[in-house]
Length: 101
Figure 1 (cartoon, rainbow, N blue to C red):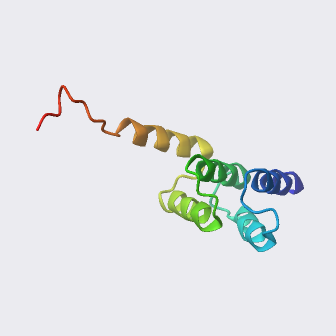
Figure 2: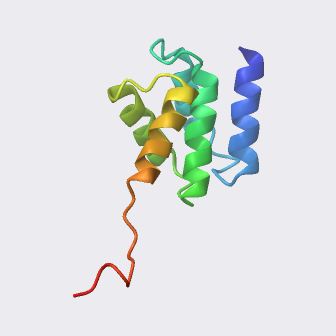
């Protein structure tokens, strides 16, 4: 458990979420007790990575991601990554040869 806390806090501190935001860290770490996620620490780190990828380093954003995954029954990192890859396949791009007005 301590190792998981250390990994999450280190990622938080090193990626611009606010080193001095002790309350935010505590609130995020409370997700470690979420019995629905199979490996909560890995899921939390995945949510933090996604926040960084989207340049939104806010606790509320990370928690919204976690809530969405839990509500969608995406309970492992593997399920989350599969869901993300399927979503990316559905992104429609503009093709000037095809999409003429």
